[in-house]
Structures are given as C-alpha cells and as structure tokens.
Length: 153
Image (tube, rainbow, N blue to C red; front, side, top):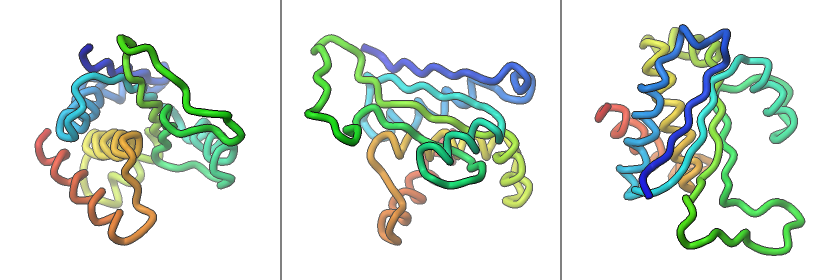
C-alpha cells in the first residue's frame, strides 16, 4: 500500500496554506525514515483548537505550535496492543498545527510561514515515528533529522 497523507485545513485558513507543501513534507519524512506504506492525518487550525488540545492532553493551559497523536501508543488502562489486519494501512496518527502560532514563530526565526509549517509537519511526523526531544541527545538527533529533511524539500 502506498502512503496516504490526509491534509485538512480550517476553512478560514485555507487561502493561507498550501496543502501540497505539507503533504510533501510528511511524505519526505516518512520516505527518509524508510516508511513506504502508512497513513498520516494532518490538520492546520487556529490557536483556539491547539489551546484546547494542549490543555486536554498535556495539561498545558495555552496554545502550542504542533501536537502529534500517535496511533501506535497504548492508551492508559488498555489491556493490550490493537491488532491490525495484515493488508490494512498502517495508520501512524494525527498531527495538528496552529497556523497563527507558526506564523509568529516564522517571524522570530526570520523565515516564511510556509517554511515554518513544513518544519512543524516534519517535526510532528518524526514524533509519530517515535522520535522525541526530552533529552539533549534525543533533541540533537531529532533536530538534525528535521534540518536534513527540510533542506531536501
């Protein structure tokens, strides 16, 4: 099965975001990591939704730039691992990006909002693939991969 990357953009933001670029960023990340058959859902929304999700899932009362929700992680209290049919698409999870947050970060970083959105799509995809930045070592690995993939776009 091929890669299936579903990009959804809030209606009010649709004229400010190129879905094709985000799809390309996710695809490049998956292929760079050797993943040739998987599904990812990516949504671009406003600060309000990211604030709600950040509070609900991370206990942080404020918006953030990107959140990843892995379909591979076991939920608290689960009895076992979910079994997928052999011919079913390996759905990795969901990525949600705040366009206003990304735009603010782009100004600070001195690059375009599109570049920031691509970086966040790469970042979110790496999280779905199991990468993290909780330690200095993990951060160095993840940041290097992000830079390499972003440069390839």
